[in-house]
Length: 425
Image 1 (cartoon, rainbow, N blue to C red):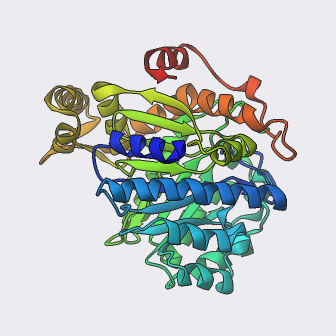
Image 2: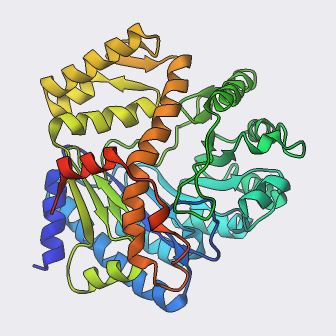
């Protein structure tokens, strides 16, 4: 048996329950300077090599899951990058990873034509996330997106009625809304989504990673709270509800998410896996990723062994993003001590007005959404940014891969402590 196949078995054995699948496609036709995710400019030869390696990694995990009697995957999410650049490769992904739940993909608006979306539906995609970001050309120009507002709207209209779930991504930067030309643009974008009848609106405050061309900036958190509360009020009047810190769902619709799935296995360059007590990260460099797989190795670059207490903390953090904490689920996964600590913390937050008790756990209050909004940004800048910056250095010398400046990333004591406490070779 190949080393990679044995390693995939070991990773599956780390998981403590059913798992979803995440697949990363790191290619873009052009680089959006605000986006911090792992990506390079698409090049045909490199893409062929990459997808050959991805086919092999997916086979290792699919076989390992089946042999352990743990399949099929509970869900499939394909992100990027721009996965819709490669519909043939997407079809291979769907075929390679048996999935009993939703099969979702991120869609660039210019790829949201009726013909392309019909192809996605035909290969088994059931949910799409349209990366509209805005329906205002001035905002899209600020973001340097490769499409205009008309393409954003057309992609959404073409997707509605074709998939079980249609999500639309929007970005808000309250600093820009001080410009008279952009005042009210975000709430107008939210209203447009509600009027169109999409299933979910995912609203993301613009994250200013230090290593991106956009660079760092101070955030006006109080103004961000005000804007998101205004979006909540708008939702309540138009048949929608706030289901998580940054998402609004049509009442009765199925929630859609890439980040709050309880356990997941990541495949592709830059993908990560959460097994419950362990967090694992693949190589970000496309060449480093492909070379590892070509030599029969699972392309893992980093492992953080969280253990039961930190694992329960990680799980609780993303549960809270989705609106609440399920103490019973934590107890089943991590045992009475970690779940008891989470329950104690939740009770304290309830006394502070951040959470409220519900059967089986706790839910965020309106104030809790504001608090979590600020906490998520701190976690992102303190832990995610320095990790990704270190990994992005793998492909800085690749043509089209030098958009990031890892030396400009945030770091600090929180990241230093996390590495020394949890990282394993």
